[in-house]
Amino acid sequence: MPKTATARVASHHAAAANDGSVRAEVLAAYERIKRAFETGDAAAVEAGASHDHRSVSPVDGAVATVWKHVARGDLKDYTQTPISEIVVEELAPDVALQHFNAAFTGSYRGRPLPAKAAVTIIWEKRHGKWLERYFQHTPLWD
Image (cartoon, rainbow, N blue to C red; front, side, top):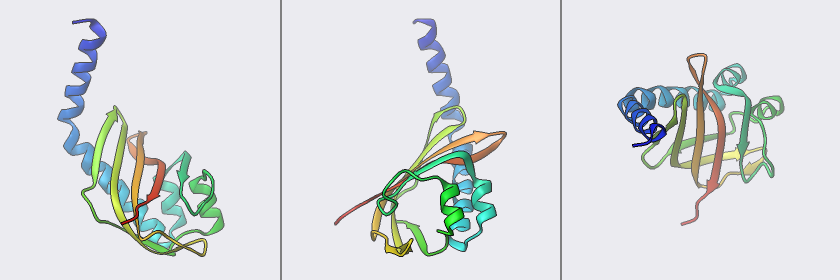
């Protein structure tokens, strides 16, 4: 087996062995930032997101940053409730993908949110802390 393939296999096995703790850590980080948005806690939102955070939402009309949401006061007008299994996949050391379907209630910037959406979040672990790096929700129709 080529050296790079061996390294990838070893890396994959190390990541697989760590799945439980990565999942638990990412889910805890998700709950913190979700609660921060829903309660309007701008400081907690900022603490849970990377400085180079990006998000994509059908109601935004463009790629945005978490800092734009905080500055505009776009917090606490909605709730997000997972309605499918929350999957967390470790993509690389200190990088994880979280995805699930969610029900949304309320509005965002005065616009009603889709009732259901697919949520995708990319997390990066920086200085020992999982931070939301990217967030996207895509509307789902019945």
